[in-house]
Amino acid sequence: MNVTVFGTGYVGLVQGTILAEVGHHVVCIDLDDHKVEQLRQGNIPIYEPGLESLVKENYAAGRLEFSTDAAAGVNHGQVQFIAVGTPPDEDGSADLKYVLTVAATIAEHMEQNQIIINKSTVPVGSADKVRDEVEKVLERRGRNDIAFDVVSNPEFLKEGSAVVDCQKPDRIIIGTECDATIEVMRELYAPFNRNHDKIIVMDVKSAELTKYAANCMLATKISFMNEMANLAERLGADIEAVRKGIGSDPRIGYDFIYPGVGYGGSCFPKDLQALIHVSNTIDFDAKLLKAVESRNKEQKNTLFNKISQHFHAELKGKTFAIWGLSFKPNTDDMRDAPSRVLMEALWAAGAKVQAYDPEAMEEAQRLYGSHDHLILCGTKEAALKNTDALIIVTEWQNFRAPDFDLIKEKLTEPTIFDGRNIYEPRRMRAKGFTYYSVGRPSPLESSYLASN
Ligand code: UDX
Image (cartoon, rainbow, N blue to C red; front, side, top):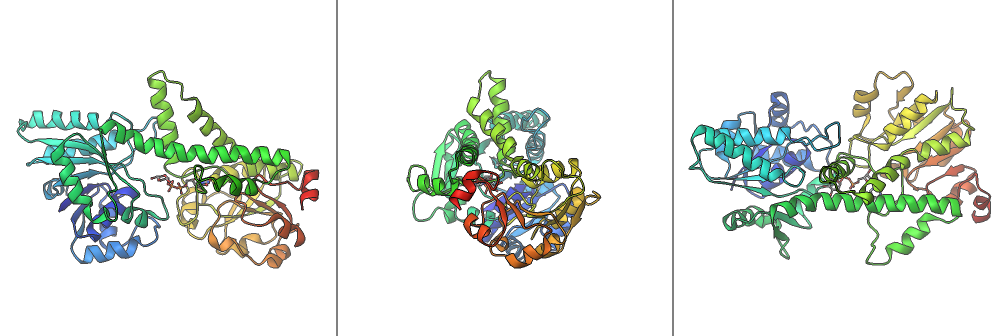
């Protein structure tokens, strides 16, 4: 099938590439000609395991094209994906301007009946707005003879495993009430719809809400666990034991119940805010969502509070090693990353930071390169040199079994603040570290000695 994808961001690029990989002929359109040129040369603007080779292979095979020519793009595709960004407005609502601009562009150039697929995460009611926009332009062109449908087809990929998530979706949500559209969508996704039928057809608004409901549910699980971790810490319990204890109940499950430094990234914070905003506009008090968001904001301060308490609020002149800057492992993305809240708080308190991340160094340089209290280090060991403590913010695989003797040697005091619970408190104590983690007995509490 001929497919056109508007937007070569995370979702558009991954989705377009995966559709090409299964044999569709995909044209990806982007306004940014530099980006298009880079993609043609196989230079991928994001770090995503497996993506680069797939882009290169499919581009070389002619199944995947990149272009700025919107008119040609529109007339290439039997379906038109809208996969552009919906950044939050100042009030937290999702800004639809890019989505609506693409809708107008499609309407401006379409010469045949079209299926327009909303892939961007957009508030309930957005498909109607896209429909209105397209109708308006077709009307102006005097082309009301062209029929079209707007489908909501949300994407559930995770950064760091986007390729695999896209190749093996848990479900394919299709929001439309048009039978002919359902048939085309089934054909489009047939290569991914193996083993059992993963396609779930529903009305457009339910499909739009499904995406928000999924992300808000996952964010709720995380904030719930962070709340339990705070309780466990104060009660002298160990949240890691509690996590295993509750995860074994299949109704709860082991996924997304890891306590930590709060969720970040480009989706959860933005989608929570957007749904809260929508609720406000219809006079609905989304109590739970607000609590999830506020717990998360506080959780991002948890490491700073522990550090401040340990050093009796005297952080001026201290230097800290930070391991992990991206909002989670296997990505270079630092959007809403907990590391940013922490670094900014440390700087405000007069401390310096020596940081290392396996992938996010360029991004950190872009964001904070000129900050005179930040040194970006080439290795995790270099970041440790003459620092007052090590802080772990992201649970990258290669932080899990470091050379602890070397860490001890390099730190002025053997103190570790671990925001992801990647080490065992008992082992750390045996090795002579003062070890803080999340939701486990703190070295500041008397219960710490008893339990270790
Ligand atoms: C998320 C959704 O998982 C995905 O389905 C949706 O399409 C986009 O948003 P992503 O933002 O890539 O994906 O990351 P995810 O793996 O979900 O992690 C989000 C945040 O939650 C990270 O900051 C992570 O560290 C945190 N997290 C996750 C926890 O703190 N504890 C957990 O148990 C799981």
